[in-house]
Length: 102
Image (tube, rainbow, N blue to C red; front, side, top):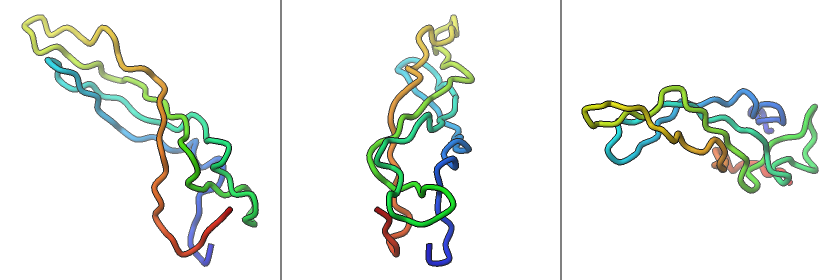
């Protein structure tokens, strides 16, 4: 759009962000976040491109995958017996406001 790159449907499948999760009396656990699926209103209906453009819209479905569980700070140093739920939601933040897609 106006010479700038935009995200198109399909780009979301390449998003993978390292993340930590924390619990009381545990050292943080590690994992990564991915976009599992876009919300229905996150595709521009009237923008022209080779594929639909992703717009801010509502919240997408996010997936968190634990790679290293949190470890108890007690002498037993036991791993987290109940790792976090694997699905949640996320939101896109606007990074430019020069052009609008509907």
